[in-house]
Amino acid sequence: MVMNVLVCGAGGFIGSHLARRLADSGQWVRGVDLVAPAFSESAAHEFVLGDLRDPQLVARVLDRPFDAVYQFAADMGGAGYLFSGDNDADVIHNSALINLNIARQSVRAGAGKLFFASSACVYPRRNQEDPESPSCREDSVMPADPDSYYGWEKLFSERMYQAFRRNHGLDVRIGRFHNIFGHEGTWEGGREKVPAAICRKVAEAPDGSEIEVWGDGNQTRSFLHIDECLEAVARLMASDCAEPLNIGSDEMISINGLVELVASIAGKSIRIRHVPGPEGVRGRNSDNRLIQRSLGWKPTASLRTGLERTYPWIAEQVRLRSLQVQPRNA
Ligand code: NAD
Image (cartoon, rainbow, N blue to C red; front, side, top):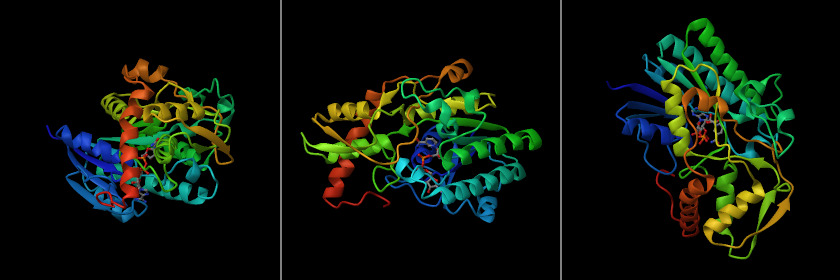
């Protein structure tokens, strides 16, 4: 049977990949976003350009009992956007409005299931001060103390969706994403996340030169390739697991280590210059014990494998930019 699905944020990195995966698997997809995907045609059968902060737009796009609603739309960016403090009011206001509208209208329209893309940024600062052994166990989220307003909004919206489940029967799934990366993601302009930023800097740098890294580079993170992320989302949606689950990699690496890895994939010798900049927490790694127990899911490939697929795409974007070739849809 053909499923009807709505992908909110279908013009973004994860949403556009998900729309393609769902359409390829025979589902009928409506996508909605402020913008069309930047790097390729949307695979959605219908793509609505619109602002999900507007309740009337939300009522128009969520006008029927979709079998599934995937909620990826958010005022989003990398560390430079989310952790500088300069965009906090917009981040919390815009994303909260989107989620409030979507929760209410999903109930009105009788949506089957709703997936909410939450984030590792919900976890409290106190568990992420040691770069060697951060803790991101799902139940460590309270008492709440996210290190960013982006994290506060995600935590608020998780709770809000859970309240809609309890009070209105909205069948919610919540994934806490930990740094998803891959091709066709933002790679320049200030909203790019660290793997894309490092790939771009390495691609731009001549062999033997140096690139800038914010902070001392000893801060740790983990990074999950987009294909692994989509598989976890599919399994979570197919399950009856109503509690939030981490969706990430547990292969932790320092930012200095990430530069080394990307440089070795690029075949370049690169030195690092550490400069002041927004760094976020000192350490973060996905704790995959619960998702492995609940869904039998864990990443299937190494960070290196994911980067070997991503670096050439970003290097090609850098080359095209130097020739002033516009990507499709830009
Ligand atoms: P993205 O910025 O590429 O996609 C988000 C999309 O939401 C964008 O296309 C944007 O235009 C759209 N959007 C923003 N405001 C909107 C509005 N008012 N109306 C309609 N559309 C609007 O980000 P992404 O990396 O694809 O992330 C998708 C989701 O996953 C987000 O909710 C994000 O917070 C979450 N997440 C992502 C990561 C990651 O590493 N990429 C990590 C944790 C959580």
